[in-house]
Length: 354
Image 1 (cartoon, rainbow, N blue to C red):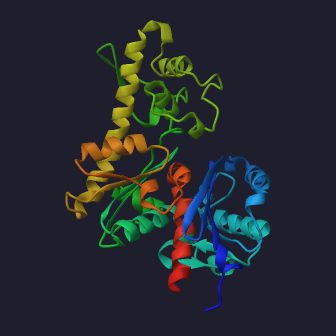
Image 2: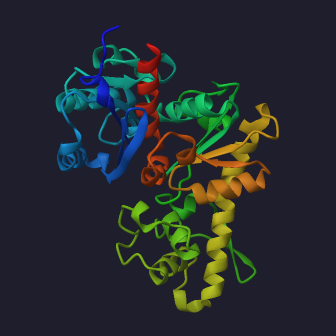
Image 3: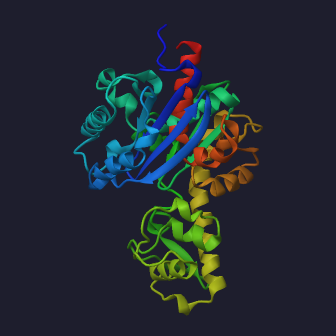
């Protein structure tokens, strides 16, 4: 078999996950993740921010590297349909990276070149979850994989090294509990609950984008500010006081109307309610697993996933500690898990001659 690597002594694979809000990348050198990064790229405004991010990291795109892509950005408003989005992103990949040493992750159909990818749209669409869960299955054998990003949460069961998912498309996974549309930073609070307890009264929420889940994490101290790459809902400072004021608007109040500890309790309530949403999905998905199967957590929302593991009385394993990675890259690789996963899967496929 002809090697895909320009230099067998330094086998470099770069994994990319093109999303609607972020571009994630991870570099795998000789089978180990050595770096991972996430960039703000508002794809709904067009592809220019994604192009700009690529220009910024041009030195990381050396000649002879293998570049491997997965995507969810085909859902962006930039494109008229999912099929148009896949075609547009494949055009973009070909323009920016060429076709040589460029591979697309087609989920259940494996890796393919750009030309073949054009006829595998249903396999490619939003298949980043398949990569991370498949890699976890290879490394762990049996478990419940949960990746909570800024906007969505993926929940997949695997057993004896094989995925046992019920759904594949987004529509199917929404029905099975394998996709829960709530995230750790960008989700609007109105999407989590319709009522919230305020001084003992279940209070209806304003149906406005006044606050998001990053505000909860900021108040509760569970948010890494580096993970909140978008402006706040009111575009005012990202401070605890600012987050409290934004949540206050959700219930028709100002922050001074309640004591700070009361706002903290309200933030805890929202966070707990979000956790219940994820737990409902996880409870359904985990029915195929025995009780000893661990939860493997990835994404920026691992604080919630650790709570989920406790709720389910299951061991917790961080995706970053599971994969081969240099020490200081583990946390970033877990946050950019799909990019790390496609890079490692391609490296492993090459090593086994797949």
